Structures are given as C-alpha cells and as structure tokens.
Image 1: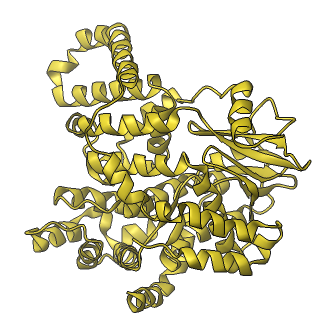
Image 2 (image 1 turned 90 degrees about the vertical axis):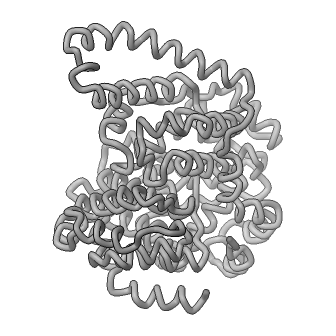
Image 3 (image 1 turned 90 degrees about the horizontal axis):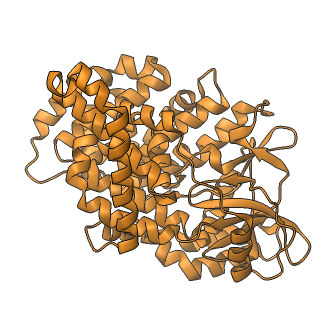
Length: 485
C-alpha cells in the first residue's frame, strides 16, 4: 500500500494552519523522510509480528504468574457457586464461556500495560466483541499505574535537553503513553507525550504469545472483533506499532489537522507538534490549558460541531481521502477554556489504498441499502474472499438476516446500524472472509466512534445523522475511487 506522503508534504507547505508554527512545514518533510516508508508498511509489519515465535523469558513469567493468580482467585470466588449450582454440568458450554472470559480478563488485568492496552481496545470496540466480555471489562475498569514523574523526566531528558517545570500529575494518560505539561528549552510551555518504558517490547512479545494461543482464544471470542483470533492479534499489533513510535504521532496529528483545515469544520482544535522536539519516545505539542474529556463534567461549547468535526476526520475522511483517525477515544481529547474540544495526539491513523477505499464505499452503501451482493463484492474488491467460496449461499444468508433488513438499519438509529455491521461481520467470518487489517481498523473505528458520540451527544443522533448525510455522496465518491485505480 502506498500513502500520499509527498502530498502530505506539499499540503503542509501550503497550509496556513501548519505555518502558524515556524519550521513545522519543513519538519513534516523531515519526518516523512525519516519514517514515511515505515508508516506505509505498518499493516504488513503487524502481520509479520503477529505470528507464533520465541517470547522473552521475563514476559513468559509475567503471563504464567498472572495465570496462576487467576486460577487461585477463581478457586475462591467461582468454585463454591459452581458446586452449588452445578453449572459446569447443567450448561457446560455457557459455563465454559463465562469461565474463559473471566480468565481472559484476569490475564489482561494482571499482565501489565501492554495487556491493559488490549483491554482498552476491546472495551472501546462496542459489539464487535461479545457482550459478556465487554461487561466484564467494564466491571473491572482496568487501568495502568501512572508512570512516576522521575521516570518521565528521565525519558524526556534522554530525548530532549533543557525541559523543566514538568507537571507532577499527567494531563492525560493511557497504557502506552502519558501527557504532561512542561516548559521547553525556549521558554514555551508545551504538552509533552511520553512513551511508557518497555511497553513496545511487551506488545511485540505478547503478539507472538497471543498468536501461539489463537486456538484457545477462538473458544472465548471466535468472532474476535470481526476478524478472527489471528486477525485480532494483527489489529492489536497494528495499534501498538503506531502508538509506540511518537514520530508517527507527529505526522498523524498534522494529517488530521490538514483534513480539518481543508474541510473548514470548527468544533475541534488540533494541538500541533513542535518541530525539534519529536523523537521515537517523546513528542511535544503546543500547549492548551484544559482538562481531560474523560473527567470533564461541564458542557462543551458546541457538541454538535465537535461531533461533526470528529466524523470528518474518521468516517468521512476514510471514504473521501482514504485517511482516518482510527482511535476515536476520549483519552486523546481535552476540553479547553470555554468548552472547546482539543485533540492532543491521535494514537493511530488508518490509510486506505484506492482499492480499499472503493471496497469501503461499496460495503457501506450496500449495508445501508440491504444489497447482499454488494457486500460480497466489497469483500472481493478488498481481496478478502477465499477461493471456492459459495457466493450464492453467502448472499442468501446476508439477505435473510433480520438485522440486515433495510428498515431496521435506516430506522433503528445508531444501534440499528451497529447491529447490521456486527451481523454482517459474523456471517462473513462463517465463510472464512477475513478483512485486511486497515479495513478492520475502520470497522473498529465505527464502533469506537459510537461510544465517543454518546459521550459528546448523549441524546443521540450524531453518528447515524452523519452517515445518512453522506449517503447522497457515495456514488460520486465511488466513481472517484474507481477513476484513481
């Protein structure tokens, strides 16, 4: 897959938004030269890493210890009830599923930040994953311990000299990274995102371990986020590879900021990266005073405008530009003074080739119109259909699925759309159709976006209204993608 890296450089040079920060346009060119080719191969690299292989002994020990603790906990908390209810005998399959989910969540909770990132991705993926698994994750509320301030100072000092007045508490935190306010060497205050020490190695090691255990994972969550167990491991690695190299983060926010600038949408500001202070482990962004969206209890200045802007850099941008924010999470957002929403880092940005963009447009249009043949054609365009597949039987099953009836999709609101997508994915997996990693990123983005939309507009209407508004444009976008192939 080739990304429009030169286009990104040209757009940055011509952008008023970029040129507010002296030297940023030239820095974008430097970052593209440095990591542009790596960025274009992230999906291929994720597929390469997500294969069984040797796992470092220390990481094996962590998982073995977590498994032992989990068994001990369940012996105390679950066994007495099981003996009384005879659940393992009365309903063996249901009992095995529940026990497997508890064991999986125990493992995620006890195995450190890399596993906590997996839990975050699953929890934010809506009904791409089984409801009991999501409910168990919500009940546990898995969070990584904060990186202590001295460690943060050490990571920063090894990358950037002269940073001072580091805030004791982080502005925002995630399992992989943490953001602090600090004073830069030139006296400017900035928001500095720091990668957690050791987490990149953990993510790669866990990928090999998870790939080896894909058969066991299949018993707990056979659909595994709409891509099967190995596909799920590839997706997790795809997120991890990008989130752990903060040079990608700098390019990501520039790309999303340019899309917003070109769309003239308001409602969301993007914190620009600061040239000269971007490395693999640390990235500095322009400073905003504010609070994390996750802890914000007030009202946004314009929730509808914020939702429209976020839809612009996710779903609309995926279909129009082949570029989309693939981790729409409140963890990346702050609320500035006056209730203005600010994006401080993106985590992951997906990129479609023209072929995948054509597949995405065809798929969305087909789901919204109840066109089973179109859904199958979209997977063929994406290169996901296996040889010898019974196309007529697949189309028949898609046509007869209750959740895929047009009336339920169009009049069922956001939930109707999400149910339709989940039903389609379940049926496709039965026929060994596994979407490419970038397509899986977009599917996960839709479900994650629904969760963020509910946070911004609790009364509903944000996600479905945006999609319905795009419907008239789909034929034109499809023709455009076909012309560019």
